[in-house]
Amino acid sequence: MRVEIGPAALPLATAVVAGALAARVGGSAVRRLSAAKVLWALGLLLFAIGAAAEAYGTGDGWGSASFRAYYLAGGCLTVAFLGAGSAWRALPRDAALVVTGALAAASAGAAVSVLVADVDPARIGAATGLRPPANDALLGHAFIWAIVLNAVGSLLLLGSSGLAVLRRRAARANVAIIAGVLAAAGSGGLTRLGSYGFVYAGQILGLVLLAAGFELAERAPGRPRSRPRGLGVAPARRGSPAA
Image (cartoon, rainbow, N blue to C red; front, side, top):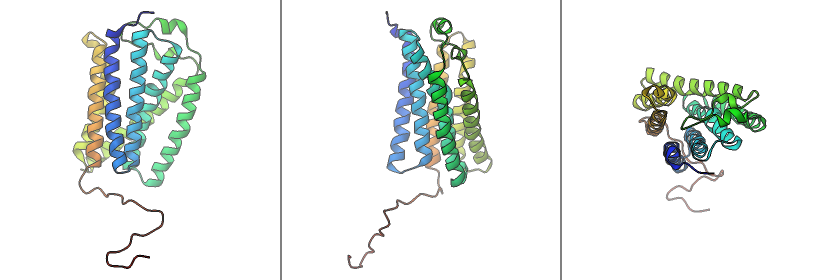
């Protein structure tokens, strides 16, 4: 089978950008543990996986495996994980834990639904150029997970950032997050400019804005910083004898 490298370059570039941003946000979370950043990094990584599957399908021809990976990672889980990260900044800790637990259960349900669903070979084969197969190429009820997870994730992302802007808390960070969500969500409309390639430009812009917003949000002045906790052993005070 002949592999078309040229058309795959744009989704591959999107995957590389998303993966690099995931590593950047994840590395920041490792330096100073933050549940929000861990979930944001996972969301960006899922976007990278979906874009990589799209690059493979575009270059080598779509199959059931590449379409399932694209649908699950990019279509179902990305926005949900990004929204859960925002929940850790906007909601009380107990509520954020509930959201995270619900996300874990919903992710398992979505994964099972996508993996066991049948794929319509005719609709998969009808995909040409940069445009991926239509979502209804995946049969069954997996689309319900995509609708619910994207709706809840978008609500958490936009709602928490919008509320923070109204309260004048980390305004620049939250404006960047809102702009990133709108850029990524509205990228599909850029096909009116004559090429599906503009969609990837909108997605990359949205990713960069989101990652910038995440970084600025964690660096916002006045934000309480968590102290590392040991295993129940208090550090010795200066001048006190060692035990």
